[in-house]
Amino acid sequence: MSLARITSLHHVTSIVGDAQEDLDFYAGRLGLRLLKRTVNFDDTSVFHFYYGDGVGTPSTIMTTFPYTGRGMSGGQEGAGQITRIAFSAPPGSLAFWKGRLDEAGHRCGEFVTDFGEEGLSISDPSRLALELVEGEDDVRTKPWTPGGIETEVALRGLHHITLTVRSPERSADFLTQALGFEVAGDRGSHIRLGVAERGPGQLVELVPSQNAPTARNGLGTVHHVAFSVPTDEAQLEFREKLLSMGWPVTEVRDRQYFRSIYFPEPGGVLFEIATAGPGFAIDEAASRLGGALKLPPWEEPNRGSIEEQLPAVRPP
Ligand code: ZN
Image 1 (cartoon, rainbow, N blue to C red):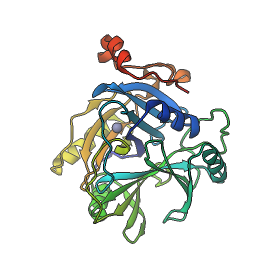
Image 2 (image 1 turned 30 degrees about the vertical axis):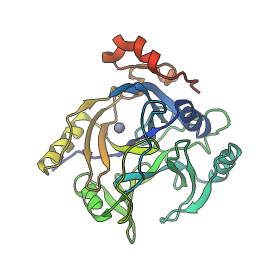
Image 3 (image 1 turned 90 degrees about the vertical axis):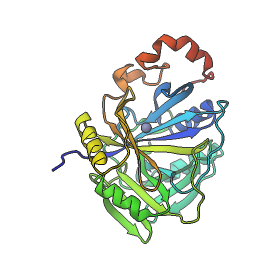
Image 4 (image 1 turned 180 degrees about the vertical axis):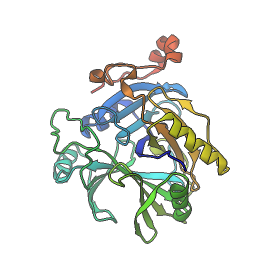
């Protein structure tokens, strides 16, 4: 019997617009820690920002490729896509967040999830649909508390991601049979699945859309979601399992802070399985994460020309 387990979400990656606006929103306004300032390893003219909790715990990580001025057109929202990213807000914190976001001119909608939690819906500067969901507290993570954000209200990490797909049942079957998820809630066609304790940061939701256009990646869309495994062995075990199911899956890729494999789920959304380690303190001190532009060793010789092409930014 397989011992490999997915323990939580790992990260979500989006294609966004202006780099400075992105930093100001995710680090400045939402108070996430800028964990790493690097480049897209597949296109070094573009930044890759990693945000998360104080130490980069898997399931707290939001990453962005800010593509403004780099010839990326707008994406198409639709079926076969992650259409919402929900962050976990601790109990009693939503009034604080509504005040903080209103004050900065971000319009918030108040709502209750299909599973009974209170939430705020907002858009990021690239019009990505975000939610802050107030559920049980996520005690697995290390909240980051920059000025003006106390521990009691600091965002805990991701809560769940929402996939819009043509057939939620097919995606649910894949999540349960291939990846070890279990159904945590079913409201008609709206399904919530979870791994491990099925708490915040361990959830995926599926909503159906028969009529939506087919999604296309571009500015203002989510590119993929990654799930966390504890070890390289667990990752290889999942890779073998997917191959034995006849499923297309990439080789293991070195992402410097973790190792990754990528594959599509049946609804068309790109999935990744990422290792929990080695983590973000591999190339700068834990106390100074995000402080300097970090490049993978194989790009260091090109640092001069890479820095010249990147837009100037003011990190938080
Ligand atoms: Zn990824």
